[in-house]
Image (cartoon, rainbow, N blue to C red; front, side, top):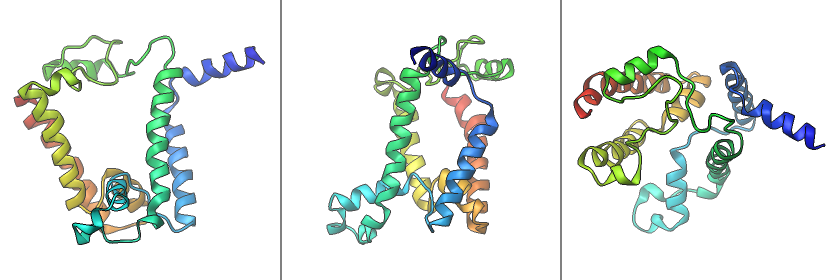
Length: 196
């Protein structure tokens, strides 16, 4: 039994092909659409605020939040699943991202000096120490505000629009996804080099 568990851990700790994630996402979406549900992570913030009594202060939070409580399990699963994967299935390389040499070269050109095979999953500028620098504050707090504002303004986040919305063939989701990608390209090639 112990040999079987060790073999499973070894199998799970290896990088999986990209298409396995695609199959898993498609399966989950099929189940959600079958039951008439829509997936989106940013909706959980509204549910949590409404559950904590924010409906007393704003009409935006006055809705039947219990009907959306299932989505909180998705968010919790993502958090705990990420923790378990990083803590127990990271493999011998630890929390190292598997990226190409071209990606490493692009990161170095942006001023993020990394070596091939040593790129961390979470960059150094996302830390408590960085939060108390001007650059770190702009990236972490400013970026978080812009992501939250953008998700609310667009009526959903990237997962809600790009996964659920596009699978339901919603034109508004297609427009939002195009906007997300254009904003990401603008950030990467215009704003990011200025910050670094």
